[in-house]
Length: 250
Ligand code: PGA
Image (cartoon, rainbow, N blue to C red):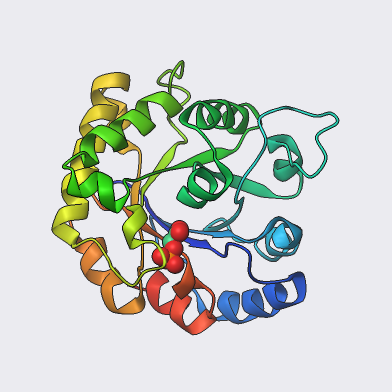
C-alpha cells in the first residue's frame, strides 16, 4: 500500500504572525507540490490565521493547530475549541504532544476527548505517542505506545480513523539532538501499524505514521527511507525556511 507522505513543522512557542508571513513567503515561493506529499505547518495559535491565509490556494500544504480543548464552546478562558481552530483555517490538530503530556499534565483520557473533538470539528488529528528514556530502558516502549494509542482511540471506529495521522515521538529524542535510528523507529511504527489494523481493519494500514524527535536535514532522508516511516514531525529544524525546505525535499 502506498501511503501519503506528511512533512509536518511544529513551531511550538515560536514565530509571531509577521515572522510567519515572512517564512511562508520564502517557503511558498521555493516549494513546488510533489504528488502524494502533504506539508503541514503547526504555528502557535496567534499565527494560525496568517499561515492558513498563506496556504489557502495550495492543496498540498495545510495549516494545523498545536492543541485544542475538547469542549465545543463556553467559559473556558485561554482555551481554543476544535471548531474555533477549524474556523481559523486549521485542518490538522496535534493531540497528545509529549510537551502537553509532560509539562501540562495531559492524560491519555484527555487525548481521547481531544481526538473526538478534532474529528467532530472536521479536522484531522495528528496523535503523538512516545516513551520516556526510563520507559525505554525498562523495555516498556511498546507497552507505553500501545496504551497511549488505544486509550486515545477508545470508542473510535473505522470511519473516525480514516483522517488520522500518528506521530511516534520518543520523548528522549525531542529537542535533544538524539534521534532514534531508522531501524528502531521503524520497528515501533510497525507495532503501531499492526495494532491499528487489528483494531480497525485493513484500511487502517493506510494511516500515516510519522517519526518525530531531532529530525534535521541531515537525517530526514534516511528516516523517510525506512519501512513504515511515512513522514516526519519536526520542531527545531522547521524554524528556518532553508532547513525546513531541505527536509520537505528529502
Ligand atoms: P524537535 O521536536 O524536532 O525539536 O526534536 C519535535 C517535536 O517535538 O515535535
